[in-house]
Length: 373
Figure 1 (cartoon, rainbow, N blue to C red):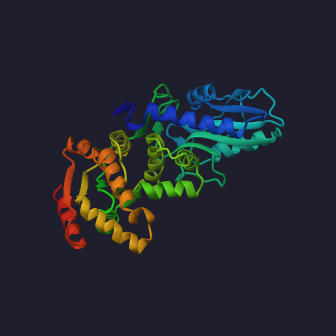
Figure 2: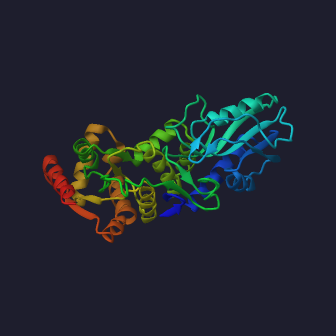
Figure 3: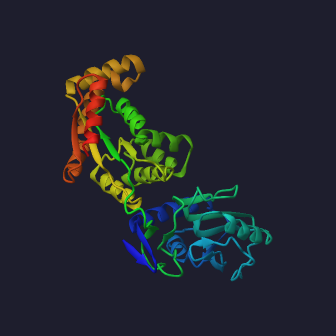
């Protein structure tokens, strides 16, 4: 918990997450603007820390200028930009990249762009560390975005509350005084291939009004829509490598932030490692919430093999039909994924569920486990 003047803030984005995202943005900029005449323009005061760290990782032959606009008073944006102060370099025929700490309504940044366009640059794009999609009012979203976040006030890493908090190395989110902890139901649904997680997830969602977050669905969405994270994940997958935890966590964070008012989440296929479990705890803590329980569907291997082969007859999935592939998938699950349950056992949040029986029987066991919390 952090106290600044009359407001309380909770941890939101860690220093390591910021560092990783800054590196990712710099890589994208280096690739996009190779061989181009580039000028970076950082908006003071908020973007000074982000601009400094970002520019250290820029390999382009480029300059940086700092400009001053006034758009915030206290905790609200005025959206007023009458002039740009401090721009001395010519931007004519240059590719301009505006570095901003946060874009919320977008009104300020659009007015800055309009003033800059009068100087006849080759192009103008925006690179922002934080973006609030729910608050955005303009048509063109920034091309380079670090984190998409809920429409809540944040401080740290250059961002301030009445000029305080800029020096913090992490980003904190405003904690509502009337909401010490959100009354959410967050479930990690666990189990090996063929345990029936998908079917049971649908029933839990219907009964408790939860949001379903499937790692597979998140990956497919990002890859299909060619997002920056999707491209990064695909670069590992095309080489037969596992997608690093930090990429998976960024994807999941983006999905969670799309549901700021959710009653809770079912995490399906995530976390798969203790590091991911710890990262998930950090993410939910930033939302004033936490994981309530890990529900693990427990089924013997021979039963799983039988189920998967039968499923293959219906779905046509090749990986479900080959006994060798099935055995390997179960082996991978036990060696790499199953140990995560010890993470939740240490927090007294693990409940094993007998995965044998009818679908209705298993559903009833899950309901009873949740009601017992």
